[in-house]
Length: 208
Length: 271
Image (tube, rainbow over all chains, first blue to last red; front, side, top):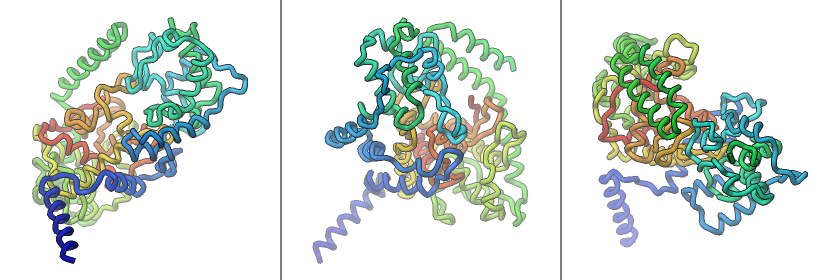
């Protein structure tokens, strides 16, 4: 009993000290839970952005719980599962039309509450990546893809990898900042092929 | 007007130059333009309207905010209040940002209905006038022009709001797996040409709160921090944060708290 009182006394003193120092009074996990509770209470559906979007899936949960660096065994398990979601083209052809790919890469449309749900989404590529040399308005959240095919080679393996990466970036880097365009239903097979062509086709300005 | 044309010309010339130089020039040019504009800022019109509203007896209770609304510095006192919020308010038993607190006063003191204020809290591109709440926020914020942020981070309730806001900023979900930090968690990132402040640093956090409320040249509308948070979540592909909710206060506490000690320049100009 005395020990208990002493322990709680010590805990109280520690809490008091933390309070005086102005530091956080709860653990990071507790704040994560508080954040989630707050989000679920204080957000509402709007347009196509339904309430369910707030629920993290297994990949998002793992990244959220581990500050984007989950333990290796979890990474192996989940990247494997993500890899198995990738639907490769039945015709085994990966190179579409780079001109269509360029149009798609330019469009930032899709999935916001102000986008119409029945309108196709864009690739959003230039938002984050440098791609074609003619486009100087590009983002830097992702790496530059200028010269992508020239440096990597337009091999069947590279085509398949590039298709898969756009389809589901989390199959290769679990907590990548890049959306899973195929997995999310944002881009279809033809669209992803057009983007692969933009990056790998020797005729694409990306590789000139 | 002359400056606006100069900016357009500068931007078009810049497009032929090398990319890095272009970004730098365009940003420098915009900053120059902003400085010129802010000397006779359109935000002042909204401040003046807000001051009238603040002092007028309004609402079912026919009482003014100037006599009834305590922003933490005493009833009606506006000077220095903006940079000391978010803070904890005992009468509401909640940590509130400036806009949320003014809404609380309008409801609790003046007798307005929250639903009526929350129905259309932001000026739309086709609206000739900003909502009353935007004018009030602009007036209150102007009372802290050139004062340093001083959010009471020693208060454990404010600290909780700050830490919860930090955790919210890291929360990934939705169709694109985005969190606030996807765009605002590292230095030197851009979406297209738009520079993205890293909100986890004092230098980035101040850029998140500086100039808000602000007159946005795109659309020519006056908008607040509450709007800025709302539109970020739209682009994050999330559902919408409820107006004047704790969720928004937490995020604003995270940013304003990280800005402590840095000067707030008052209502500003935004792209």
